[in-house]
Length: 72
Image (cartoon, rainbow, N blue to C red):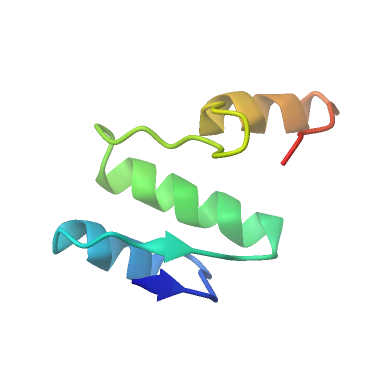
C-alpha cells in the first residue's frame, strides 16, 4: 500500500502487523522521526535504513544531531 501522508506511522505499523508492504511518504522531518521510532519500538528486529545511502536510522539521526548534512 502507499501512504502519501505518513504522519506518526500508524498505517505503516498496521501494514507490518498484517503482513503487507507499505511505502510511506512524509515531508515533515519531525513526523518521520516519530514514525520510525514507533516502528522500531514495535518491530526491533526489522532494520530501518535510508534508502538512498543505506545508512541506519540511528546513524542518520546521530549525523543530524552532530550538525552534519544528511544526503537524501
